[in-house]
Structures are given as C-alpha cells and as structure tokens.
Image 1 (cartoon, one colour):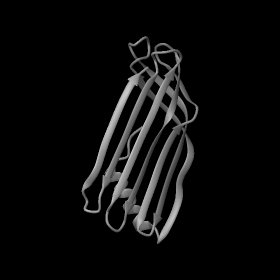
Image 2 (cartoon, rainbow, N blue to C red; image 1 turned 90 degrees about the vertical axis):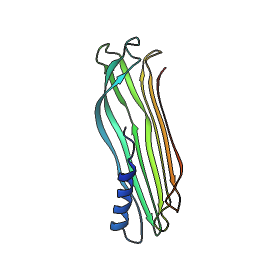
Image 3 (spheres, helix red, strand yellow; image 1 turned 120 degrees about the vertical axis):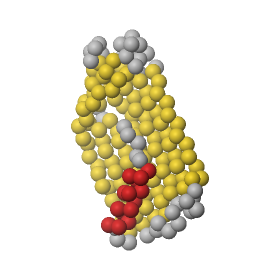
Image 4 (spheres, rainbow, N blue to C red; image 1 turned 180 degrees about the vertical axis):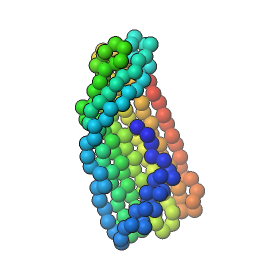
Length: 159
C-alpha cells in the first residue's frame, strides 16, 4: 500500500476548498474492490523466499469534511478475505491488516497534521513464513508554517 504524498494531500485540500460551499462532510468512497497482486515474501520457501500471488476484496473508505475554517480527511484500506499461494511451493497465504491516513488542516492559519499507519501482513501456515510490514508516519505544521513534529518509523520482518 502506498502512503499518501503530502503534495497530493494538499492538492486534495485545495480542491475541496475551491469546490465546497461553507460546510460539508461526506463519504467520497465506500466500496469493496477486487485486488490481484504479487508480493515477495523473503521468509517463505524455508527462508529462500518466494513470490506470493494474492487476490480478493479490499475495502476502501475515503471521507472528507469541510467546516468553515477546517478541513479533515481520512483514507482506510482493509483486506477482506485476501488469499493466495506461493508461486514455487503452492503454500496458502492470507493478506490481512489495515492501512489508513488522516489529515486535518486550518484554512485560516495554515496549521496541518497528517498521520499514516500501515499494518500489512502476509500470513502462511506454520511458523517462520509470516511477513509483516509496519509503518507509522506523523507530520505537524504549525501556524508559522514550520514543521513542529515529524516521524516516520518503518519495519518489515519475518516471524
């Protein structure tokens, strides 16, 4: 899952401001979409790794709210029954987790916050072949336009 890009997020905010009236909130997208992708799992195949092909539904939720001087938004992506197999071993895997991002900004003084969390796991049968990706990111910009808080923690491991 790709993380939201700050320029894209800011462009979304600007579009919401230009298009919107004085106040509104809505669910822009709330659907399930079929996914079909492959991922390399380094701990699969007795530690030599293999590509795992996964298919299944992904729940997608996107919301935006504009209220006078404030804009907020959220994206949420969650596999629902994602499954597949290793292309070498044929082992069965499940894709689970959630990836979401939230942002909030002032239309008066430029304050802005964005938080992104990704927890995605490809789980195989038994032990030692479960691949886990985790990232959390936070950015805060104060009314002076200065970055007042920033962190980006990423990890990927096998269990």
